[in-house]
Amino acid sequence: MKLDKQTASLFGAAAVLRLVLFTAFPTLPDTLTGRVEISTPVTSFKRLQEGLFLYNHNVSPYDGGVYHQAPLLLPFFSLLPNYSTWPIFTNIIYILVDLLSALALMKIAESGESVSTKLYTSPRKERRWSSTKIAAFFLFNPFTIATCIGRPTSVFTTCAILHAIAKAVNGASFTSMFALAFASYLSMYPILLLAPLVLLCYDRRRASKVSESLTSFVFSTVPAVGGSIYALLFMSYQISGSWEFIPSTYGVQLLLPDLTPNVGLWWYFFIEMFDSFRSFFLGVFWLHLSSYLATSTILYATALGPAFYYLWIYAGSGNANFFYAITLVWSLGLSILVADVLFAVLRDEWEVERPEMIGKEVKQI
Image (cartoon, helix red, strand yellow):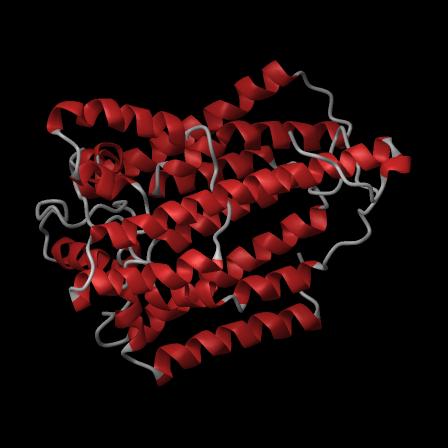
């Protein structure tokens, strides 16, 4: 994908803004790194630094019970100059990851997949934002910028997911599956996107007149994900010298032994949970998670979340219920958002089939 002058200027401005924030406010990165809204126990840059210190001194980074991230991140960051001396190189890596994520978003927008699919084409397909505007909203979103400055490793997962989708809408199935495998290697949750991505790849291949049954396509594509994940895990084994990293990375996400407060819903629930019920509700929560995909956020929760966390942890004038209540509001907002988006799509299809009903009120039952 070639960048025109407008896109190149946009990317340059976004990169310069991040560099200015990194250099003009040297304490800002560490401040944001410690924010519970940006970092979690499995994505924290501070924990990555501790794991990197142990790795560089030939000590297993998983011995201390603090580092819970993928082993392949360690040799990558060890190639960079020491962060305390030359932070600019690490900062540039995070800036480049943001730009790559924006580039993937542009490819997704240009594909037109959201307005024209195999079974449905919206009559409003010409009324859509340009890919450059979408990239601008992403790159200059305050939350995107704060995440970049805070340097959690979740940005690598996000970038891999976006590229998996971008490759899928262009019919590059194996590249898409490898990107999904890499995202799943860094964090378990992206594997939930396997089924929709496989179907998306199949639809795009059919649109390009490539004849192949769905069954044969699935059996030729899904093993690519498994093989890629196995290769990444085997490389991790070669680097760490043991399989100790599996319970320390994926086991922590599955079994939730670290109950550090974060913007998720699990930590408070399992703090109150009796040990005899823990295994059962872990299973229930994971089953529930596999049924939904959270896609966005709301301003209300992002404003009150930090305030309630401050009242609880620092001011001592609140308790855990303050922070947990706002995470419930956040999740409720996500659920309502998904329902409204689905209703909008169904309404659009309905008006296409019944033009005489355009503009008329519809009662939801």
